[in-house]
Length: 280
Ligand SMILES: [Zn+2]
Image 1 (cartoon, rainbow, N blue to C red):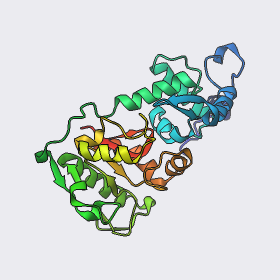
Image 2: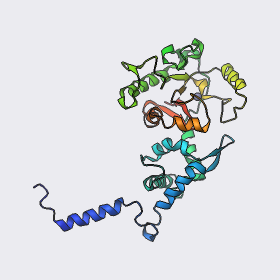
Image 3: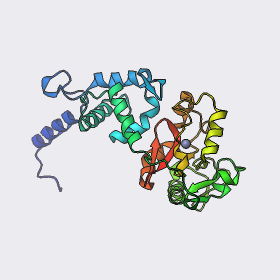
Image 4: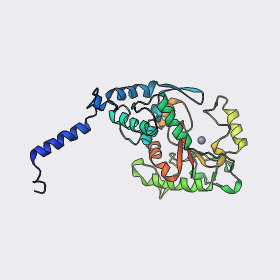
């Protein structure tokens, strides 16, 4: 046998060391491991994921469960948010971010994560010039009757969007209805809801949505650039209510975007699961 040179005692020692390394709560309460979060941190995360009170755009928020897919991507873990492994991934991110590595997503850590996402968004929000825009075909849009003047997209953003859709279509686990590398007319997922908006059109939207605060329709919208795309990710297309966003972030398509959109130059807007910005 190939491994006959291994002696049983060596194997036992190796197995014990391996078990210690894997045991999520080993060292809990011992000074040696005191800095490593354990079951307590996991419990805190389970609680705070639905109960942490914080504010976003002057609106009070409850919990961070809606952001779990983005958090997992950020801290590079696939583990459940109530697990010890997740808490340890949080702690590693906290340490890198000069925060106390408690392993708990409290207010301070959540704001630091949101700042990371917000800082990665488009900085220049200048209105696109006509030569920077193209008119995308109706077949790319969620609303099959959308007017031509509302189908403008910045050229490079559109090319990147098409590459991203082709990749999503090629991922059979998403089950997107397609013909070649294009979505069919019956497939709603990843279709464009809204792209370039003129200042006039944004003002009209704001008038029609009187409750839009700073977390709603922006005065200085990234949609002016033609590089922001609202894509269909499930549920009510662009409804910010928690129940709707909670549903959207659980769709395979949204979770695929969280993991893959960056490869195509797109960054998320954490508060709106449908809103993606091309930042290259
Ligand atoms: Zn948007």
